[in-house]
Amino acid sequence: MKANYLELSGVGIEFETGGKTPFRALQNVNLKMAEGEFVSLIGHSGCGKSTVLNIIAGLHQATEGGVILEGREVVKPGPDRAVVFQNHSLMPWLTVYDNVALAVDQVFRHSKSRAERREWIEHNLALVNMDHALHKLPSEISGGMKQRVGIARCLAMQPKVLLMDEPFGALDALTRAQLQDSLMQIQADLGNTVVMITHDVDEAVLLSDRIVMMSNGPAATIGDILTVDLPRPRDRLALAEDARFVHLRHQVLEFLYARHGVAAATDTGAKPVSAARVLAVEGCDRTDPVGRSAGDSRAA
Ligand SMILES: Nc1ncnc2c1ncn2[C@@H]1O[C@H](COP(=O)(O)OP(=O)(O)OP(=O)(O)O)[C@@H](O)[C@H]1O
Image (cartoon, rainbow, N blue to C red):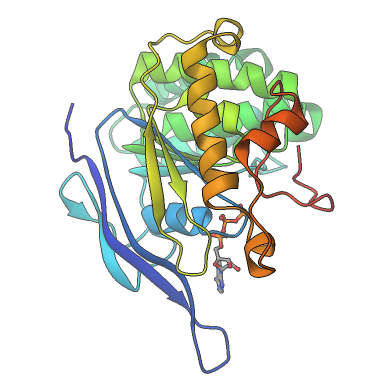
């Protein structure tokens, strides 16, 4: 396993706003990831998580600093980095099989025979338990199933890094839990290097090796990094009662609410809400969507 497999050094970005002053979204973001590591990005809405992911994906260019993947600078998108978005991005006119085939043909047209590609597509759909629906159209399967196909499509490209932008954010709690378990199993089997954005504190602790907690923007940066040293495989039911899990969860909440309370609270001079209060209010028994307003359609 390579230690500095993916490295962000001194990453900053300014966006043109149309006015005189550009908007500085990120400043001095530094992160080194090992091969096979699972890292979650968490932070309040609008702090810059997707921007970090897009810079790693090569969809945005950093204004300062840069990203090195396996010794090479990332300057544009490439098949070595696959992105899973919150809402599946399947082609509605293609079957489940053909949606995955599109990506597989692009990457393996010259290196795998037609029969090998067919086997590979079916194998990846089996990994996410979707091999029973090869010939269905996206409109004929559920939201969770579509998301499974999106994940299979990314896995089938054998990317060096899997980038996931709130992959389970739009799903109901039961489907989300099933997909989290599938993802843990797949990562245990394949050893993928994963960067995942989430607003769900429990999800971050359950899935990650490390949780990167971002400060509020503008000029957001990494505020702290929490190592999740819970042994694998992880069982969600057992962990719910596990003192270490509860402690890690509390540390994330402490960062988000006590140390980096929402901007509205600090702007008005009010004290940020304490993690203890959040836990007390929520009864400490549920997932904590971060930085979502009541009107936000993505709220869990
Ligand atoms: N292309 C762009 N042009 C101008 N500003 C942008 C652009 N993309 C992002 N921003 C701004 O940069 C900041 C970070 O946005 P980003 O989408 O990365 O946040 P986020 O943490 O992923 O938010 P959320 O959790 O709500 O998805 C925001 O203030 C956003 O308005």
